[in-house]
Image (cartoon, rainbow, N blue to C red; front, side):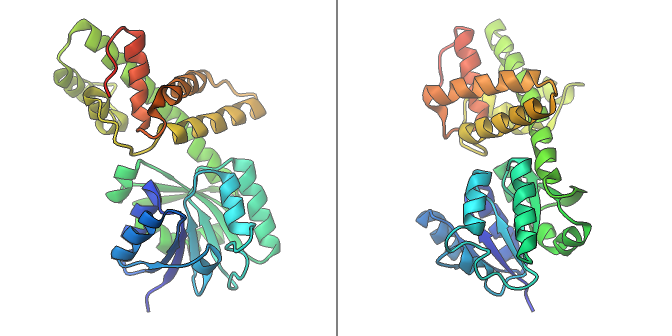
Length: 296
């Protein structure tokens, strides 16, 4: 008998999650405030439901993929929230990029209600999500992590248990801040090459094969080079994540030099109207600083 899973949030990442789960034979019931996303979900074979609470009906797991931890809390504990009529033994797996302390607090509150919780962050772009080329980084009990392995296998290529609730969210922020540095260095190098008149395709090919190569160069290099900012992850989301990382650095007294600069560049891109574009569009800020024309 097919396992039933609820999903709340079917945006850039959530849509890919539901696609793979449906392809993997799961029965998926989903909720989103965006009617177009819901229609697309239904066309793929999913079962739309009327509220976050309804996603938990008869489900073994509910997977959330939402913009902020504040929204996650409202969706879980608010009116018509997932916790309202959650069946015994339900596990909520939150794939959002959340504040670690918020995940820890939510997990503790749900435990008092007999509901299990994992902060189940994912690493990868939405394009990688559609290829099932994501990893899950989870925080919670080992027992709950093991119970979620079939779910994680349904939409990712690997899953890692990082420790208690909040650990997955912290690991995700660390992954992101290292990505920030990779993308910043790539954009800076490409802009220097553009100013020097180096042929772009040749330069990127060499960078991808050189000692500095990274997944970022493969995934984001062509977008930066061509000015194609079709969103795989948006400036507004990147800015939010960067601010969360800075907050943790301030809380723990850790240096956040690269993250501080990245945040300012994403803020500049946001103010220049690139809010909903791919986070790689910040290269236009550097191009402007270099006196190169803005590409729309």
